[in-house]
Amino acid sequence: MKKTFGVLIIGIIGSIIASFIYDSIKDQPLLSTLETALLFLKNFIVLILSIKVSLWKILGIAVLLISAIKGYHFFQSRKTPKPPDYTSYVEDQFHSWVWKWDWKYDFQTESWVVTNLVPYCDDCLVRLIDRSNYLRANAECPNCKNRYSSAYDNYEYNDSILNLIYGKIENNEYAS
Ligand SMILES: [Zn+2]
Image (cartoon, rainbow, N blue to C red; front, side):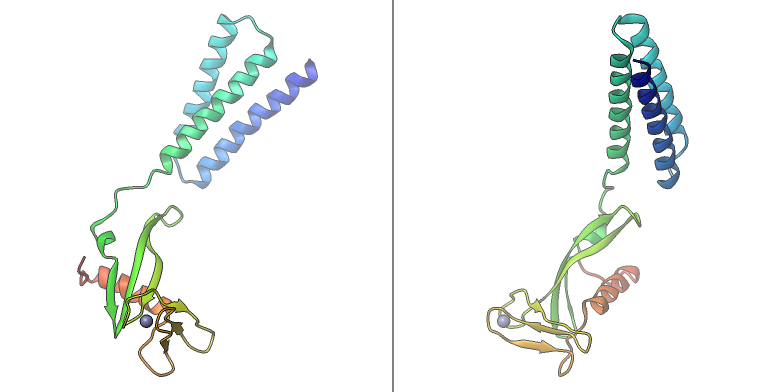
């Protein structure tokens, strides 16, 4: 019994420390750690006073409660913010090529980033397959088998297109 109690206490202290570390890393206010600890303490006292069950059960419930609170905070902080206007800008022509893409919210940088950037075949408007290597940008149409390359035309690397897209947004030159 004493051993179980010790293990549970270590577990609880551990989760509070983990929660504190998580908050420091995520740049969240210290308040949420304090709030979690106080809520836990409150629930713990209420349980001790009202239910006559063995201590390890109370501690088990307390651990579940703290996990639920932590989980709630986590999902609250992971909510995707409202997409800005420029996220409706998903297609453009750069030089002679048509490119299409999607937007996704990056929680690391807290910004909207381009994803699934794909060039399209000029003739059939089918997604091209990227065949680029370290020497040049290459793409191939799976339909008409047209080959596009930076070696003989205006085909661009995805990185260049990315910067052109962000550049248009920064300079407010995009059409959505
Ligand atoms: Zn084609």
